[in-house]
Image (cartoon, rainbow, N blue to C red; front, side, top):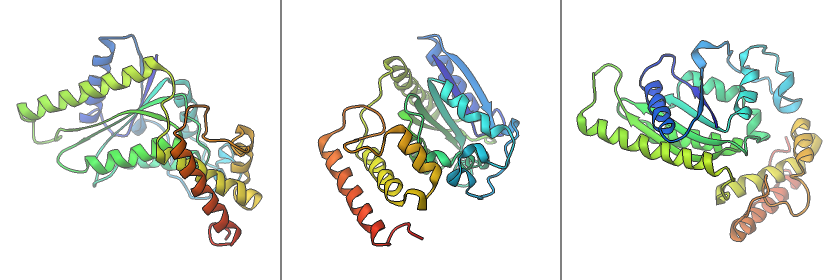
Amino acid sequence: MKVLVIMGSPRKGNTYHAAERLREIIQQKAPVDWEYVMLGDINMEPCRGCFTCFARGEEYCPLEDDASGLEQRMKDADGVILATPVYGFQVSGLMKTFIDRHSYVFHRPRFFRQKALILTSTGAVGTKDVLKYLDMVARVWGFDIAARVGIVSHPRMGPVSPKRAKENERLLQAAAAAFLAALQRGIRSRPGLVDVIMFHAGRAATGELGERGNPADLNYWTDQGWLREGRRYYVDVPVNPVYSALGKLVEWVMRWQIRRGGLGSG
């Protein structure tokens, strides 16, 4: 099993040490090939917002740096850990740049085989917002999310209290167990209601806008077979019939709005 850690901290501080603790816990139970991408150590320029990756494809991005190779490294992994400290109630700037540079994946999801674990550390507050945001990012990108974990560990106020240290350990143990179980299980989890709705929303926008939208999106969805009649989700997994019905309703409403010129017609 191969795990890739996308580390959004510019240094090997609390978030890095939490990831290392996850590695130690997991490797006590199973052999894992563990790899880090330290975003602060690679050449990754901020997104220019030119929309080239949306309209033409990510291979046409004018920025020639290390960001382009990160997608393949995620594809080659069995599990991906998105790790960031809380900076200003949100992810770090490094993590946000990483996400921005891969924003085309929001339109063209692809990480359906990979399991994801979301990790953050904070000195006081912000854990809930960061975990929620990264959960949304990973979910829309296609990841099967196995666990989310946030610890409290201040970088300058010294060691945390014994009670907090015990709680941090409990949280890391639980997340590691869930992540390892998902990696060993291998099979894709059933999509939730939000996952199904996002699929049908993407179908509506891509199918109705066609070439008026982003040609790269249309080509990708067509090649994946996601626009075919009766398709219920990105991958062939059981889908709750109620979720499927609600997703189809959302798709119908969105298609109707687009045809009336009320959504995304420009």
